[in-house]
Amino acid sequence: MTAILVVAAFPLAWLFAFSRRGWVVWLESVFSLPLVLAPTVMGFYLLLFLSPHGPVGKFFWDTFGLRLAFSFPGIVFAGVVSGLPYMLSGLKTGLLGVPTTLLEASATLGKGPWETFFRIVLPTMKGGLLTGMILTFAHTLGEFGVVLMIGGSLPGVTKVVSIAIYERVESLDFGAAHLYALILVLVAYPGVLLLNHLQRRHSRRSQ
Image (tube, rainbow, N blue to C red; front, side, top):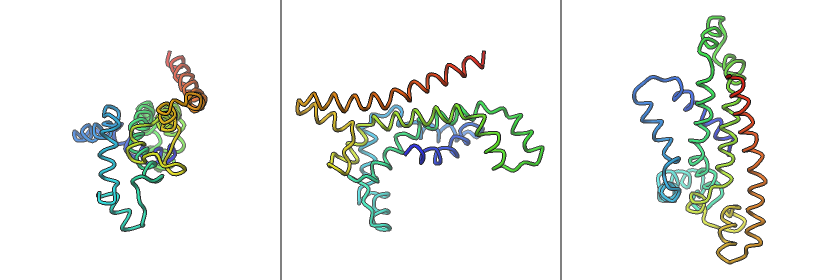
């Protein structure tokens, strides 16, 4: 899911970082809505869109015979939508840190856009890229509301760790809930540690 978001978010991040057109801020605000909307609100509307009678769900069902609501592909789709603003934030920050003089110099030397992207943009913004990936992965790992609305809790199909914790607490099985929660903490902590390390190193370099 994180890999999908890197590819999907890059063109948008580039647009939001460098475009000066007035309508861009409106579009960016739309993609930032998952940051402030209640997960159940977003999950409700995604469920309407992804159901076999919704525009997206109907297209996938009629074209590929693929059901999105209450399925693993639906969870992936919902995770991409809910994680997009986190990836966009990291990528946009990284792109804004790329000196425009380097881009202009590359163009002056006759370098193509792809060569400029891979040899200048990506190495320069690797901190922002890693930040976006870590934030997105951590958010996706702990996502609950959207996943529950779109996927339900079908054993072996759509049940994830965050939902399993909720169900174990509901049934007063605190031992299993502790175990699942500990797994999430152990997986998430290295990412947060790496993110803080990168931010401290960037701060020292700036000083």
